Figure: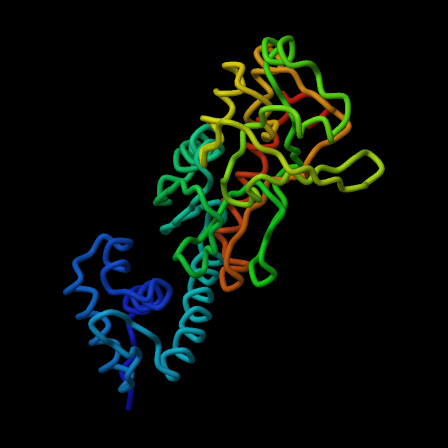
Length: 307
């Protein structure tokens, strides 16, 4: 007869399975590798199965481990919903969340919202990371990715947070020296600041006109970066044209440091809350996504109508 596994051991097992590494799982959980290995050994003994194939270089789920992983996610989600449903104060949100976002948007907008969320829900513990690449939350062990951009894999759950667009901008000094582009093809003759960040295709800008037509222009310039904040600052300094989210440029436009050009050409890049399918309907995810939606829509209310 099997002993009942502990929920905490199932949590440890789930992190090891997602991260395919005892060390990475230990880093995420704030535990020692030895302790993580011990908990997995106890779980395997409890279930009388082998959960992982282990080598010196990798950790992979066995066939049985794959089945246990799927079932354990269901068990933990049901426990989470049971606790939430039985809590006298339904507004109580507790537990741990790993959240990620991009550099500039994460630092300037997501981080302040997280600060407000944990103030409202003190039993919630959040680990926040900013990354310059597109993330698969389930594969990399994140519970939630607050992202700008519409490139979302179909196996992930994506909840809309706010509409958003990227705009073409340049400084008044740059435009005075190099002229104002009158059509999209004119950008070929301009110094364009190219960004390789998350879903940006390097050197190609796809922009949509008011009638829904998508036009592509190949751009180049003397400066490129993987950091959007750096690119915007270079544009403010007069080095060229940048394609950047309204979240990042609206203050510069309002205060005259940047000027929007070719306003009939924008790039849809909405704000989304993206998370693994197995976290669907969990109380803390629903509560946190709702909090982000309210807070970020409030922040977006200061934008110009072109947003």
